[in-house]
Length: 330
Image 1 (cartoon, rainbow, N blue to C red):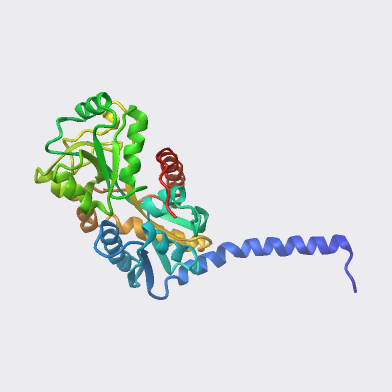
Image 2: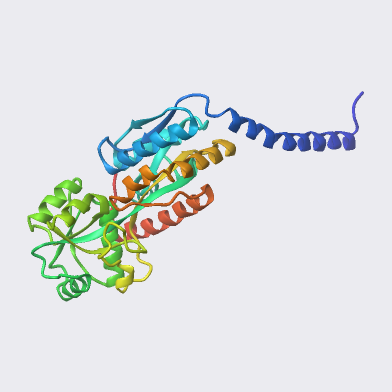
């Protein structure tokens, strides 16, 4: 017997209500059953660098917290875009994760012409740690302080050079932001990586450079390069006597590298929550904190909502700097 229209509507409403009632339980069940096997943490850079080191530290601690092995898989190339794309297109089941970062998950959106993924392709789990770019000068540079640097460069536009680890790198764009804020003009000398740039800095062939704090720390502590300022909101523990750019006359200035944990979009919320809890607990380990803080990283460990908002802000900030610099990649 055919039901009348009001009866069919009532049945549809009841069915929908029942489904909504079951949904939280289904998600909880997914979270309860997960993880049932080994996880993969994709590090979108080659082995041996800072990103790889952070990834391996995190993987070891997450393995303890989750009761399943977390294996690091290095997938380098295209400033981290290849590995990030792999995760963006992976099954959203919580078993393939990404060590996300400022390059592939903020700067790349602005400088690459044909990005294979978008920010909306990820579920961001937690910001892990941040580390500032540090402004250093070679020992022949006449300015001994950040104020000296600004004065010299302002009085001599186009005379002094600044190195970077590559066009569109965070160091390059950090200087672009400072040039815009301070109304100064330096000549950009891009290198293929930080090591080559440091070599020429020490040799006096380039005047100044912004680069990650952990990479520069050995050169600064040995006296081979001189730190003028750090680009974080607060002074960095590894550079306690080095002022911030913000406190030196440019409030709000910030140019930091960062690492986060992300997963493919549509990963079940219960799994994201479980991953966040495990990550926060892993980062509270005295061992991992000591290793990160010893080279100037500041451990954060926040929640998915905060990290997602942070990524949105980073995309906007670095995008503005990239546009001003004109940096573009194929």
